[in-house]
Image (cartoon, rainbow, N blue to C red; front, side, top):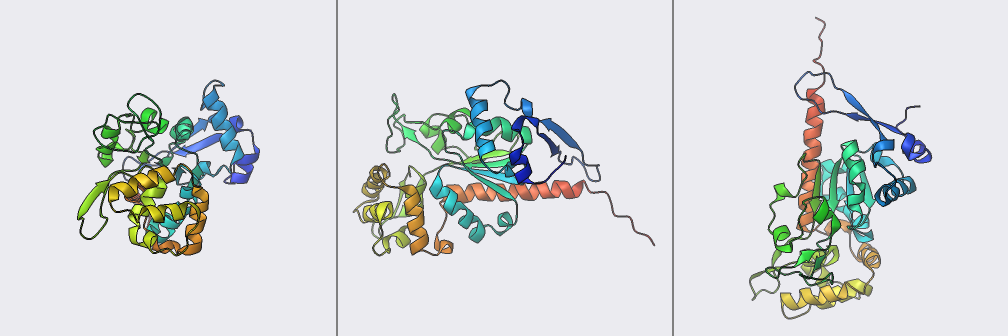
Length: 309
């Protein structure tokens, strides 16, 4: 049985699926080929990683097998807001078949065998997760402190670095895998004018929520009667200095509900008014560009049109 139905794929045992992966064209007019992938061998032996990946895929709709690309996000707030960023800011990406998975930074790398086997174009939106030099306690991200990342995806997959200073200074072309099919997007330094008299300053967000607040500074400050974590962030943005505001948000993020904050944003704000943080915009631009390249490759492989005179 062959199918394009994610529902049928979902009902089948994962190990009995065979996936037809189309290979990109190498020259114009070349006949397109496909490679048949035996998914029973994707994860190898019955390790904890293979068990997790199999259970995760089987617990979700299997649209990974049919998607143009995948976006793996850190948490519920990103899962709710990233589709709106795409819909309102990335029209071409909105017209593509994108599989959006909430997987968390500590587990995204566990889907690596499946994503690489499928040859699936993927963007991993994750958090910097800064920790101390010699322990795993969370710390406010700063340069030149020998801090590290606690994010397994960043350490063990892409870009394969643990030093916070290295990650903060990494150019965009090094945030992708060698075959350029997978890219990570994580918090990077932001330069902004916190107060008119202060001039432009730099700060480093810790997670998606404080990145969003700093990117939409005036919008967050203008909210009337916000609740929960959103209220804490708006109060923090009333601090005298950018450094004080950033540290207050870092502390607040340990206690508030991020999902509740996203819902509160939907209630108070038209989603089109929210500007995505730069690290997410950069990642989505990369994905949009790669999908355009993929489309051109497929067009190049089409046989020439025969005209009957």
